[in-house]
Structures are given as C-alpha cells and as structure tokens.
Length: 429
Image (cartoon, rainbow, N blue to C red; front, side, top):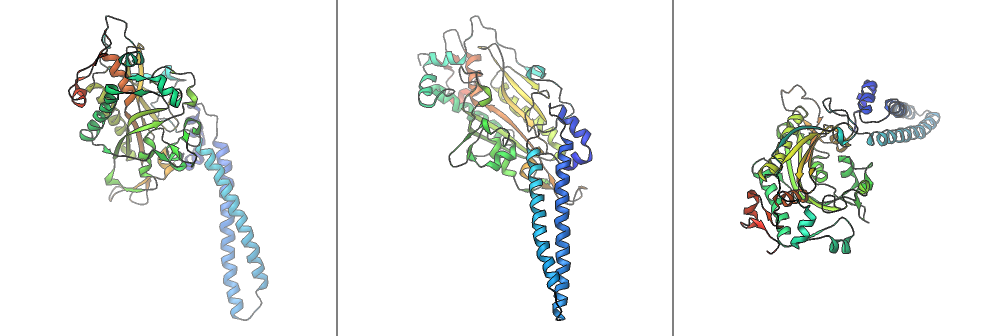
C-alpha cells in the first residue's frame, strides 16, 4: 500500500514510478477520490462540532426554563446529516483503499528497466556446470527409473501437478529441508517457526496476494486460504504490532508445504516437479529497520546462496528488471540453479525487499528508541522475504547434477550425514 500523502504531494513522481511498472497514470484519480473522502470527513466533523454547541445551548435554555425545541430539532437534523456525511466519507475511503490495494510497489531506482525475464541482469555466478560424457537426464526420468518418483499414481488420486516420492527420495527431500533449517537457524540466526498453513483474508491482503491474485490460491469451503508460501504467516507475525526499535531486525524461517493453483502458468512446466500445486519450501522473512533493509536484503540473499554452495550446485544470481519484479517487491534477486537435464538455469529462490509496502497494509510499525531523532510517534517497518530454498527444486538440482551414466545419483557431502551416511542412490538399492 502506498502513502497517500506522497501521491498528493508529488503526483508526478508517483505516476513516473508506476510508469516503470507499466501502470497508467493514477494520481489524478486517487487525489480526486481522496478529496471527496476528506471533504466528507470535514463536513462530518463540522456537523459534530455544531451539534456539541447546540447541545450546550439547549442545556442552558432548559436550566432557565426556556423553550429549546427549535434547537433540539436542529440537533436531530444535524445528526442525520452527520450520519450521511460519515457514510459518504467511508464509501469514498473504501474506494480509495480499493484502488490503492491494486497498485504495485514502487521500484528502487537501481532496478533495471525491462519488459520480462529476458531483461534481467546477472550479478554474479558460482561454480562451473559439470561436463558429462553422456546425455544427462531430467529429474523425472531419473526418479522414475529409480522407482521412487511416481507422477501417474499421484495424478490418479489428486490430478496433474502432484507427485509421490517414496523410499530414499522421500528421505532425501526431508534431509534437504533439515539441512536448510539447520544452516539458517544455527549459523545465520533465523528463528524457526511452525506457522499455520491456513490463513484468513487479511493475512493474504497484508502480504499483497489479495485481492489481486486470488485466482492463484486455494480456498477452503470455510473461507480460509491455504498458504502459497510461509512468507504469509511469518510476515503477519508483525501485523498490528508496534515493535521496539532495539528488537529489529526480526528474522524468521519455516519449512512448510505451499499450495498454488498455478492459474497463470497453464501449459508451463507440466512435466516433472518444477511447477507443482503442492511443494515444500524453507522460507526466510525479515522485519527490518527502514535504514537497514537494503543491507538486510543483501544478507538474506547471501544466506540463500550459501545453501547452494554447501551443496556444490552451480548457480547465478540475477537482479529482476522492472517488468519481472513481483507486485509487493521494490527490488528482487532471483537465484537460479543449473539443471543439466534441461541444460539451463532455473529459479530456486527469490529474495525481495518490500520496503514499507506490506507493513502499511498490515499496520506493522516500530517505535524509535530514545535519542534517535524520530522519537515521537511510530514508523512503519520494512519487510523482506526469500526462499532459503525451494526444497523440491533443490532435490531436482541434486539429482540432475549428481547423476551418473548408470542412473545412480551421487549425493553432496553436506547431505550425507542427513542420509545416515549414504553416498549414492542406485536403481538397485
């Protein structure tokens, strides 16, 4: 959500910021609607003041035994007029909020302009893609040959975009998640959380999934939503709170199932585990001081990259262009892992700084400490989120990068302790 004072005070800058997003100029419309709201609020306040004055005079007249009926009639009429003005103010305010809720975040100045993912820029790369003396297979071919990955049976019970992992692959998926959580909590200072997997409307509104992206989500008959990412419950832990400045940053992590309808991805990645309706992810969330959020963004991205280095998986880090940056983010880094079966890099983590955009929607604030200059009132925190990492896609990367000609898979050394010392997955084991 945007600060409407910015739109009123500098409409040209707001429209220029939205133009980078491909959004038509909206400042005039917002300002007009907000003016109606403020006018109605002023009218309601003036009517209340007048009613207070009249009530005082009525009391004075009655104390003297004089007739106060005319003033009493005016108070009654004023009450109805005030109620109408308050209703008009609320209606105009709701219209302003509805409009603002559908406007994306403004981008950081250093986000490159571009139309889509082809215009994203590589910042750095780590590791050399392995050279194979055979044609490397994709993960689904490897998994089915192992007899441990079943798409057909999953489709029979749940439909497309589901998978059943069994035996060593199910164990490997669990091991990868355990490894990620251990690194993020024990080395990087994130607090592990086990959050709800079902949330109400306001939680998804706070992080920006609603109202714009409801079609991408699953909703229960009871009106709750299945989380598309643990970003939603973790970030909402600060909703409605006034935090102490000295407690910032707050860093949370969680491994959860995630559920997405993939309504906007029809026909994309229908083969294998790349794009599933249900998948597991280790999420990272930071609630940060506004002056420190850019620094926190770099730190979070490094925490995600570190997992890939420990697993010896080649990757590259991209800064997303204006046309590819998500609705709530003001700047995003995508980390892409090398998949030899596909012969290309694929996203395995997105780390985003949302600034105060989500905080305004969920009213998450902090109180500055003594001697900080801003020691009066409260200020909005900045929120950040990132994958640390997508567990299923990490499983895919481990399988494809570790494959051998006979279909066996060599496990990264970092995972072997989590696999009871096992070094290789074989078709005959």
